[in-house]
Image 1 (cartoon, rainbow, N blue to C red):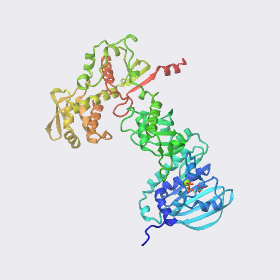
Image 2 (image 1 turned 90 degrees about the vertical axis):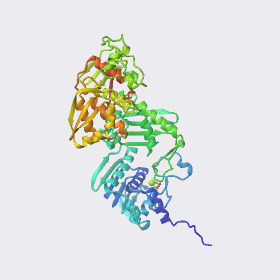
Image 3 (image 1 turned 180 degrees about the vertical axis):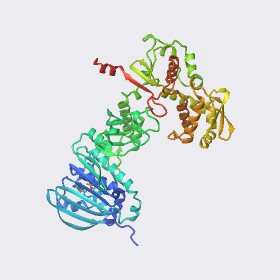
Image 4 (image 1 turned 180 degrees about the horizontal axis):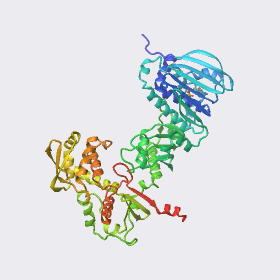
Length: 568
Ligand SMILES: Nc1ncnc2c1ncn2[C@@H]1O[C@H](COP(=O)(O)OP(=O)(O)O)[C@@H](O)[C@H]1O
Ligand SMILES: [Mg+2]
């Protein structure tokens, strides 16, 4: 009987391991920089050529290795960092698997020079896993690893490498992550002779974060500090108003070790509740602390992922931590704090009935029946001031409140329009003299595509021949509404695909129409109109932002005012 099973020769086993540990230049960079940091390096220098496909050079001023250790380090499972299974719990070094060096050396032309003291050291040359030379080298204390022609002997893998720019980006990210993890060490990254990152040793974590992510993002972050149950969470998250749909940065650590976890990021985003637009992605820098026995860091070949014993617990605490951090910001303040002071505590008031007020900005009761009724008589009996023809200001329980009139109206319209699109449609005003509008081909096409939706919000559109359309009836969302220009703007937006970030077609239409139909900044409002608008606003679900994700309400808390006047 023939034997089918054989133990793989080391060289083959190393190449197979390389498939898991070294996926692309960035993974080699990551492993080599981790080794430098594990060796106590004060300074790590990384050089790349051609995205690391031609050359990766990582040098450090760490402990270096003696000759025997250097040779041994190239053996699979050779590590100085763990001895027993128990050592794995609470391990503080990045490395512990003893796989990286042999894996990288098996798929490249690899040179390692190292010295434990300035002066005499060792040079090792390995080609595709074969040790070709062990000799003397002169260098300062520390280690340099040169990796040329990564995957030269595994063409199938080499084929999968991306463009130099994309590999460079991934390698840059890997260095940035480790620079964030070790603010006390200095880092340099040079790409094709140009310095891309240089941060000095001995930085505080905040300084390092600002240096690596840039001052611009750093200026939009607020601190997080929270603990519950077995977990602590610290770090920084982006202010809701500054989150953007693209370009965000994220970094998670557990017990100082960087890791990736999209679900935990999702949990952090959940902490924003409705304070951000659904398409926006805030930057997040979160350091999670947990007992070493409650997290397993050895679940991924490249150590990119970890496993928490209490998965639900960690997600909950991260979400709470973010909410807690944002709590002091206006955008996440509870709705109650925005309400005007009750009647009697302040003078003034237009004395209009709820029906009259609602009439000015539409009748919410019929169109959004699920909304709680607001007792207008009591709650709106406060003086309202319009400033800069753009903001409504009033006194509330906890300070001064500023409402952006356009944003507020847009927000309330959005909700109303969604109800109209899915429900009964809106009341339209028949025009005595129909409006004729000339459109472009693209706009005509947009009118056709969105005919049903335009009709539901109250536009009765007829063809006029050529590129013209006639409006026989139009909506009337507020007294100063200009139906003709609103229709033009909406159709132009639809034709140009503005608001493309809204995945749902109805929502996209509602956002477009709400934006264009709302009162604008620069329009003078009567006190009764301001009241009516606020009434409508408080009857909505009140996420504190509009369809663009901009803040609708900004509060100047009384204690802030008192602090500034030196009363506190
Ligand atoms: N830059 C370095 N400076 C000093 N020692 C190093 C360096 N790189 C690797 N070593 C030694 O080589 C060993 C093997 O490295 P590696 O294959 O990455 O495995 P691991 O980091 O998991 O131990 C390490 O445990 C360490 O003792
Ligand atoms: Mg290592």
